Length: 308
Length: 84
Image 1: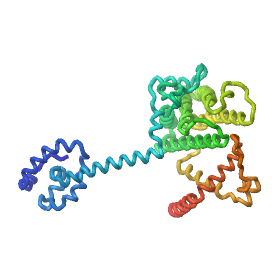
Image 2: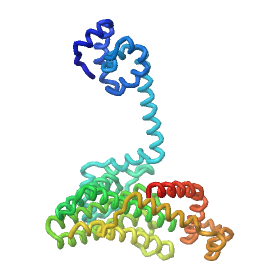
Image 3: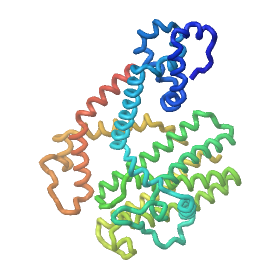
Image 4: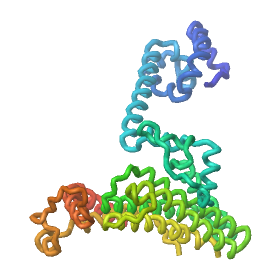
C-alpha cells in the first residue's frame, strides 16, 4: 500500500476529507488481512463511475478510496469467498488423483526412524524382526515402526542423488545446468518404469498382497541411498572405493529387499523359510528375487557414468 | 552411456505400446495363438495362471483404450505435423 501522498493529491482530494479519514482507520485492519495489491484491480473497474469525480489519483490509490465503499466491501467479501470455494474444490479434486491423506502417512517420520532406517539400508544383516506392526488393520506410522515403508527417505535420496550427480559432473568439468534436469528426468523415468514393471508382474502372478503402489515407490526409492554412498566415496577416494562401496550397498539392498518383500509377497509358510513346492510359490519366489536383483542393476546403471 | 530419458519419451513409449496392443487382430492372430474371444478362460479358481492373466490384460486394454487411443493418436499426429 502506498502511504506517501504528494501535494497534488491533497488538492484534488479535499473534496472528500471524510472519506480520507475513514480510510486511514480501516486500512490498518483490512489491508493486512486481504490481498494487498490485487484487490485494488478488480473493484476499481466496478468503481469506475465514482472515479470520474475523484480524478486520476484514484487509480493510483485504489485501496484507500474504495475500502469504505459498501460496493467494494461486497466485492471483496465475494472475492474471498470465491477464493475459499476454489481452494476447497481444488483440494477435493486433487484428493481424487493423488491421495493426499494416504501420502501423509508416509511422511510421518522422525529423526530416530530415519537414522535407524538408513542404518538398516546399509547394514541389514543384524536385524531380526522384519514384520510391520499393525494397529487394528492399519499399519502403524513409520515413526513407531522401523519396518514400515516411508516416502521421506526416497524423496530426499532422489534429490540428494541429483545434487551429488551434479557435483560429480562438476569435478570432471562436464557440468552444465541442463544436465541436472536431464539427470533428474532420467532417474525419474527409470523409477516410474521400474514401478510399472513391478506392478505388471505383480498383476500377472496374481499375488494377493497389501502392497500399494506407494509402497512399491518407496521400496524402489530406497536404492538412492546406496547410490549416493557409492558416488560420494568414489568422489572422495577414487574408483576402487566407488566399486567397493557400491558392491557393499548392492548386497545390502539385495538382502534388504528380499527380507522385506518375503513377508509381503510369499505365502505364510514359505515366508517362514520352509521349503514349499508348487508352481505358484516358485513364481512368487522368482518374482521376489528379480525385484531384489533389479535394484543393484539400476544402482550400477545410474551411477557408473558419474565416476570416470 | 546414460540414455537421456525425458518424461516425453515415457509418454511416447506408453502411446506406442498401447497402440501395439490395440492393433492385434482377433481372427488372424490372436485365435491362432489361443487368445481368441471364443476361447475365453472361465476358470474362477483362485489360480488363473500367468497366461490367463495376460489374455485378460490384453482384452481389457483393447476394450478400454480403443476410443481414447483414437483421440490421443489424432492429437499427437496433429502436434507432430505442426511442431515436428
